[in-house]
Length: 189
Image (cartoon, rainbow, N blue to C red):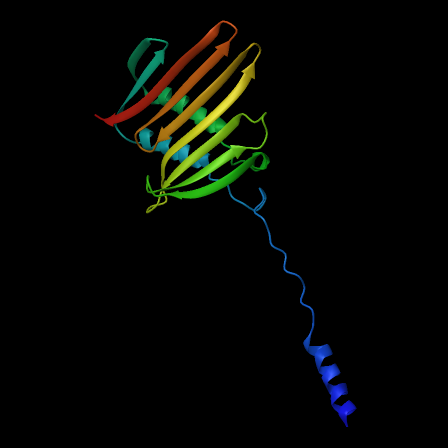
């Protein structure tokens, strides 16, 4: 009689202990993650300025000399489109960068950071600050670097939404270092 209970218990255990297929956790890869569309933001900003009646100013500094002038919308567009060449959200470039996101309480922003995985990448880093309430871009910071013959060129691009952008270029040659800054801002007439 004792063996009689053993047989149903064995059959029950065989059917109740099915192994479940192992669950595979997916890491975000460049193919599955979406990079922030920088080009869309820049194009929207260009359109924002183009559709309004702004006076657009350019301040250009090289060494100790500064020159200020009013520029037209075509000149503005030409300067602003340099940001488009630094867009890393294209699918063929995403694998070259690591994305991190953090909530910065001191600036009330979410910061999306991209760091280059390859030393040969043109864009070394990019920070995009999104307003924590509206999720709209507040600021963009981009650091790029390239070599040209006997010189090294480092550029720092920054854009403040609906206000201004700035490009700081440092050119290092065997003859020394040259710093150049271009700031473009717009105000209502």
